[in-house]
Image (tube, rainbow, N blue to C red; front, side):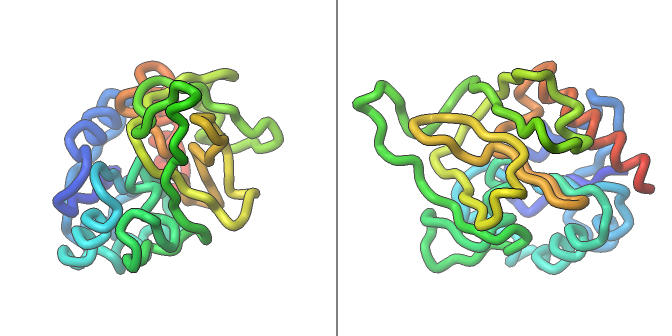
Length: 210
C-alpha cells in the first residue's frame, strides 16, 4: 500500500488515481499510523509553499513525513511536494521547509523578452542524468516530455542529488533523488505514458523494499 499524504492541499485524488492506474494500491490519508505502516509514501502539492507547509504543520504531519522520508521506504514528492522537501522558499519568506534536501526554492526570472511566461505551464523535455542508474529514471524514455505547472523551482546545494533537469529560461532541477527519497517538479499523473512509467517504477520499488 502506498500512502498519499492528505494535508488539505494538493492534487490528492489525481495522484492516487495515477498510482492505481499504474497498478498499485494507494490510499489518501492524514493518519500518522497509516503513513508509518505504508510501503511507500507520496507527498503531493499544489498551491503556495507557505500554505502547503502550514497545512502539514497544522495537521500534525511534519514529523510523520520526516520519519517516512528517513525510514528507508520509498518516498516521492510531487510539484510543491518537491519544493517542501527543501529548506526554504522565496515564496513565503520566513517559512521553513522540511529540509530533507539542502537548498532553497526560487522564482523563475522574468523571461518575457524570450517569449517565455511565468508560470511555466505545459509540456517540456527532461534532460536525464546518464551517469546514474536510478530505479525511477529507468521508468522514463531517453528523451521524456512531461507536464509542468509552476512558478518556482528548487536549487539544491548538492548537484549530485539532481537526476534530471529541464529548461525554461534557465536550467532547473526537475527531478532529485538520494537513497530512498525522490522528488519531481512535474506532474507524473498528468504526463501520460512517461508519468505512468515513473509511477510504475516507484510502485515497483515499494514492492521490492517491502
